Image (cartoon, rainbow, N blue to C red; front, side, top):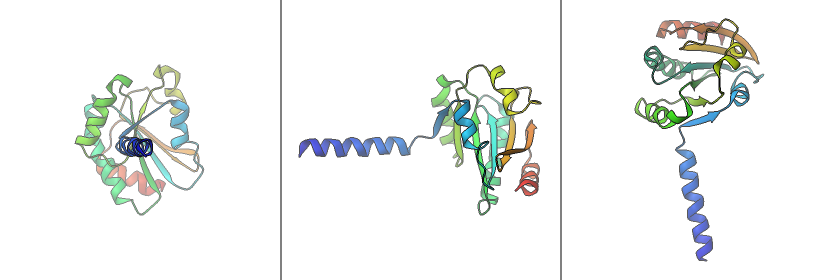
Length: 159
């Protein structure tokens, strides 16, 4: 009986820890599976950012607002942090403090020179940068920050 109780407590604790996980660490292949390789009719908005990037942090509320505005439509926002793996707790704290509701990934893909061109050949690698996919195809890319009006307009035109 004691063993069963201990197993039950361990399972509850593990599920609590998993439910509270705010940021998932992914490699480039796993990132592709999040949006680029999906062939459904959802518009996936992938925003590359970092906690140390002031314009990135300033535009996050615009993506949050857009996700709320378009919540009844097939629109999903995914944030991809370019912070280093050792800054994972910083990213998680930022997400919690700013009450970020959309999915957050931390990209652990090594040298950006190995994957930036795969995201978009015109991307210099600076952030913020946003790419949108629909039906497994890239439908939009922007290097630089958005205003609320700009992000809403792009979503309206691409959804």
